[in-house]
Length: 394
Image 1: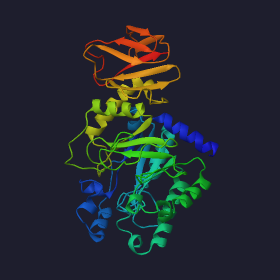
Image 2 (image 1 turned 180 degrees about the vertical axis):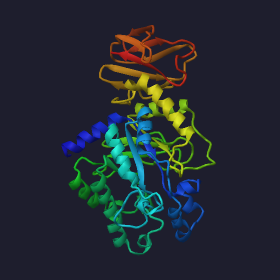
Image 3 (image 1 turned 135 degrees about the vertical axis):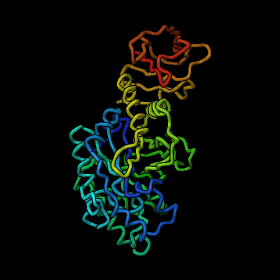
């Protein structure tokens, strides 16, 4: 593997937390990004939405500053979703953001804002396309089209990575059907360090870097999208929504609590995975307040506890009924949100514990160690009910 790609992989793993953005002309309808498919809206009725799309309040710098305050280190955004509309200035179609009343190139502005704030930018791209006539009639023509668009994204905006979604629509002979290896090797002639994710729900191909779990913790398959166990050679990532929707859904009020989201982030790190947490901006270009508030609270927690998430590795213990654990250098971090009835935490650790402190405050904890058994004495009420982190120096 190219050393530049290997370094990019390691840097990406260390980031641990990113913002997923599902945004397109579907936001005008306020019923999610699959509205065209679910409501069987024909292209002739759906495509005119672009004539009304004018996100006049969109501010790329404000988005990136929100991500940064929330403790996120990268952004993955929909350059093209399944509806085929391009949120960037593609030279290969007229069905794009610069032909709307808004006119501006959203991706160019976001790429500049990300560079300014040192936030990595990845582009989601859907090879599946509900409106392109060649998708069902001329596969060679369509393959040239979508390959050309991915190559265009890499050349024009120099993203950190490409995140594909939709190859599950034709899962047989995956690589041969979609000509994935050909595409991957072409874009790596442009940028040898570029990372590639493909949410096809199969074992990652050799040229893919990131294996994504959709709406599930790594290794789980509660929603039926993630039948393949984590691959030892892949960077593992969970992509998840704050409510139940990816694209803006005005009627979806099932927002996860800040405590739930903080614990999901910790669980991902504990399983040696990143968390890509989604927002679905409104048609005016703003991110809804319910999502902003939760992200900012996560950022506040990370300011005190980020050492237990960033640049850590997981899989410290086989199971943790009280929470989860991460590790970095000579530190083991215990993420605790369930206090055992005994108010003691027993862990098996074949290392000598030097100190035990609350990471956020520096306050010490009483503990005893006999061989590989460490007993920690907890207060009946945790300092932070969302997730209190114990820093064991070993």
